[in-house]
Length: 177
Image (tube, rainbow, N blue to C red; front, side, top):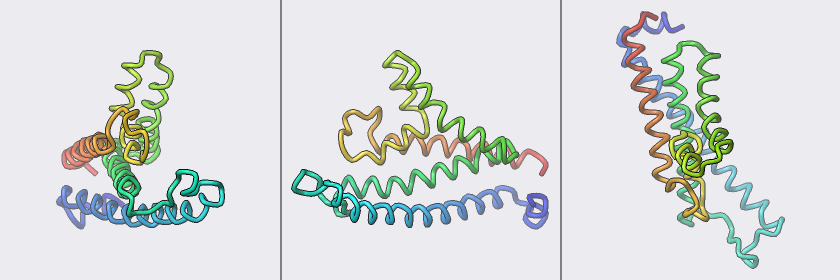
């Protein structure tokens, strides 16, 4: 369908931007529903399993700063991974290959960081990996143990997404459909 799309709208940057905007809206909406549903489920289920205020576990609430950051950050993380995927798909131009590249990119660095014995290299791989860095946004406790702060981690994921989108956009402009 890309040939038909580019024939109807020959400005490839416009097409790519429209795809990115549409993807962002859809993923942000779905992510919001999923995150709010998860928070509601946690608020209802956790107290029945001993996670009560009496035991030092306050109820989940968006009024709690770390919970709000984790919820909003999770939506942002999902959106950034979707945009990273769009950029990679535009680069490689093949569905199966782009899925393989994304899964490899997301899971290979965290697995390597667990296999490598050197703590310096483990921490570095956790800091540069789009998944391990980005998921730091979901942490609400023991923030000092994270390889990056939550917002710096989401910044790393945003950098990966931006690089993939720029490369994908440039390659889309230079290549034939």
